[in-house]
Every structure is written in C-alpha cells, then in structure tokens.
Length: 373
Image (cartoon, rainbow, N blue to C red):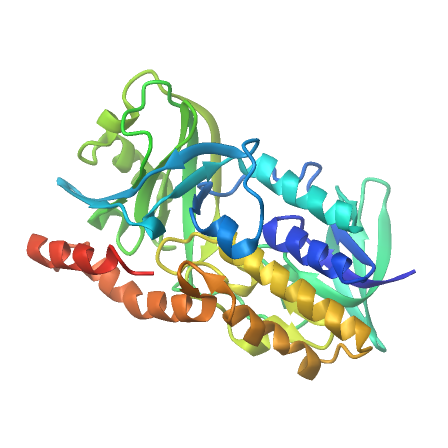
C-alpha cells in the first residue's frame, strides 16, 4: 500500500499536518517513535493566549494547567512587568495536549502507529520508501509525500539530503526540572530571567497547578546543569518564588533551534516537507514553538493534500507551503512578519539584558516591547 501522506512524528506539527491532510481526502499515516504520544516531555509547556484564536483549536480544560496573566522579566535584582495580551497565556500538560491533537487527527481519518521509529529513507520513482523499526522487526512504508515533523534532530531532512546540521550558533540546549511546588508564590505569571551565567539564553519558571517547570536555555559552550543550579540557588529572588518543600518529579532536556525558519530549500523538496522544530519554526528569542509548530503543520497538511489532488508533488508545486505558512495569523501579525521582527530584535534583546546596558536602557526597551505584537 502507498499512502498519500506519511507524517513522521505525532507532536503538534505532525498531528495537525495529518488532521488537515486527512480532512482534505488524503490517505494519511503517522508513525511515532515513542510508545506514548506526548511523552517524554521536552518543553516548558507555556503557550500564548492567542494560540486558540490563531490555530482554530478549541481550548479544553483537560490540558490547561494554569492561566497566566502576564510575564515578569528579571535582570538580577531588577524586575519588569509585561501585562498586554501577547504576554499572557497558559501553561498546559503537553502529554494531554499532544494526545488531544492526535485524537483530532484520528477522528479526521488518520492512522497512527506508535513505537515505530524511522531509521532510513530512500527515493524510488515518484514515491518515498521509509524503513522503520518496530518491536516486531523491520518494515518499509511507501508514501507519495512525507512530512517530517520529527523535531530538532530531523533525521528525515538529513536523509533526504535537504537539511544541513545545525551549527552551534543556531540552537540552544535546554535543561529543566519538573517540580512538585505546592508553596509557590506569584504562580500566575511567566517568570523569565536573564544573566551573564546564561549569556544569550535565559532561565524560566512556568507555574502549573501546584507544580512548576524551572529551566535554562543556553548556548552549546555553557554547562546547562551548572547554569540551572545557579538559577535555582543563587539568582536573586528565585528561591523565594518556588518557596520551600518543592521536590523534583522529572528531569528534562533537549535542543531547540533558535535562528528562525530554515532556508526554503532546506525544508522542501520533491515529495517532502519539514514542519515544526525540524524546519526551525520557533520563536528565536524565547524558544516558544508550540503555536508556530501547529501553524506549520496545518500549512503542510493543506499543501500536501492539494498536491495529492493535483497529482503533482514535485518541489515546485510544494513551495506553496512556505509562502502560505508565512501568511498565517500569529500573535497579532503574520508568522513571517513576526519571525522577521524577532530575528532583527534578537541580538538587541540579549544586549539589553546584559552588563553592556543600563537599567535606563532596559526600562525604555520594556516600554517598547510591552506592545510588540
């Protein structure tokens, strides 16, 4: 059997790509390498308040952990409040959220196979052949179009020969603790902290229901474990926020692309599209990628199903994916405009929140970004 669309990865990008393509009459299969969709979690689990408006996904209490009324940015003893709409949101349970999106894909007609890892990729005539490893052994799956939603590492892009390896300036490594945190104070805001100990990166506390995610994102040369230890134990005020009697539930880690969307030629080729983290569709300042991944999945699904109907999935016909994605509504503007603005702002952001700038510089900058959409 040859599938119209094979999606690699059942994260937000993959599930929404599959849902969209299946709703448009494509025969779709998702393969997910893990036994459980949404786990392990490699995410701070924060989303923007505008996600549901931008993506059309219905908010469900089942996956909402905490409503967030604003963002507080720290530079050591300085603290700045950001309370406009784009700085508000929710923390979610990613395992429940990812399962919810996968169920939407299934309802639309997608077949999902878990515990199935893609281990190789070959081109044959006008189709792709993906070699997979399952608990039972090895299998091959044929598809006209592959959507690689396989995360930061994106083996699909590498095997297809379109995606280069991330260089050390294009990604952050993250280390996070998921805490039982019953006595946390200020538990309805995102806490984001900058400092020389995690230069060009940042630390965060994202409150959940009697729990919290606390972590750091740093450049390759920085020791993430030591940076997080400093953040928890020595950064001003952090111990006061998480308070006492907290305990570690889980340690988490992973990489995040932080250089904006990759080049078009690295995300699209004959019969192949990359989506989500695999395509660098991530906020290049904060590393937030849930909403942008969903939008890239929707756009990939729309383009793939259109090309299937036209019986043409050559690169020239798939290029519409990128142009339509950049037009998607995203936090009061379009995804393309937002990513462009953030890339231009990135270096200034980290310079302002460093010893190279003054408190007055930071106050003026906060006034500027408080209404940045």
